[in-house]
Image (cartoon, rainbow over all chains, first blue to last red; front, top):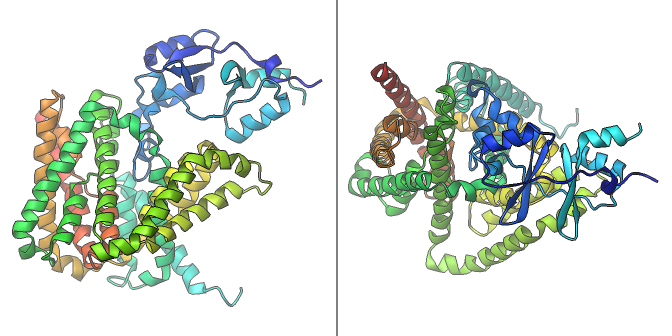
Length: 139
Length: 387
């Protein structure tokens, strides 16, 4: 019987969207490597450990097109974050609890993500991390 | 090779692309935006100097490049709403846009016909709007080079610039729609309404459609469908009397609603084909259309517009940032002076709408150099004073 998202998932760790970036760093000093971001009790995205990387790059190494794009109708705030929302990845990829390990690996590879939330009846009930998929999977 | 393919086009494109990247790299290394390097490449290789490449040969590629610029802008509209919540940035961005627009328009109405080859209100409207829009690349580059992007000054300046440009593009869209005569507007109204309905439907439901697109067996289906949507909407907006580049912008907004547009693979493909191919050709084409004589003949008009834009942006930028108690009001105001691709987009839309002829490109080109030089001089002065 292949392992499913329910077998692989960890408890989700929720943080408010306006949590300061310093507090987000503190959260990552524990065992967490993905935080689910909530605004008005609704999950709006997630912050992965590697989301903080951009904020650590020295400014002289950053190309302005990465921050604002070529015409720049946006500002990638993860390069200069104040809050969890600035660091957040707002993609909407989730999996149901019965999603198999192989399918989860496929989604992570396709979407280039390190973790995927598990959704049941509109609620986030857990998070499957990349390292768990690798540990539990058999090549 | 197949007889239908033109070897000359391949040579022109290859040469233009290669030379653009070499000159663009040199410009980047001396602290000037690579885009200016691409334009200079076109000017050198074009009919005005070396006469190696004809603008007509690469015009089709340049059109796609212009569309991709706007498409990528639309593609990243997701956090614009959040940026607009930055209250002080909103006040600065809108203050500079509206204040400069009113000042430039007033001066153009009073003195425009003495300095410019136009004497009617419509070209003055487009010019006032185009020259009231700021550039975002230069403020970002300056803030990064000074290590200030993460400071309050940096965030304030860059967000104000994003707000200024976004509001400016919305204003030019409104201008294009309202610019039709009443009779034309009635005829076109059906087309515009149909386009708006189609846009709304796609905007609301594309995230449902893309579940099917993601499941397609064809490996490049997402990319191909995106490109078809971009070209189709550009064509549709042209047919209904709006500009092709606006269609590309709307296509970007639509695609940004899809899940697949968030994936790194998709972003990398769009970046590669845009920044690595079509967009440099668009800027080099812009350089090809310029002539040194044309620039010299229009230098009075260029200087007049540059002065209006610089004076109003400096005054408003300084006053508003001083009112906001920001640390470096002169630096903030100076970084808003640059005229670049954002203004060029408005002028290209004006050409598309028949408001200007190609002479506006000769008038605009020196402004890029004049504003860049002004910023360099102002920053040198700021550094000297702070020492």
